[in-house]
Length: 79
Image (cartoon, rainbow, N blue to C red; front, side, top):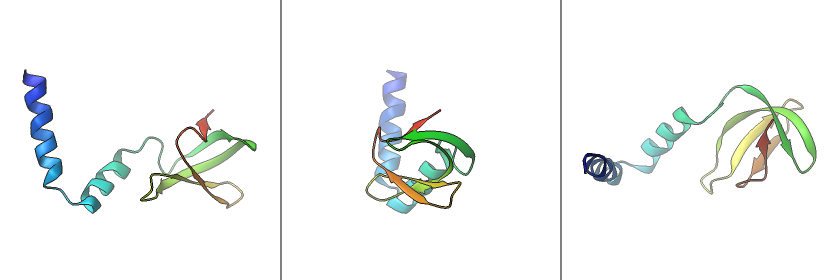
């Protein structure tokens, strides 16, 4: 029940938080953000940097050739 109480407390806190605050927290914790990394998509492997997400949930990656790429869930993977 301690875990459940903690989850309820956290949900209550989230309800009081603005979208922009939640978005900032999310991006602060986003795995490998602002780090050059190897990825693969339907076009093949490439190197790029996760720069954020869009309001619709798509992941934004700037590739090493300066292309801004946007991906939905499972359209890109880490290598």
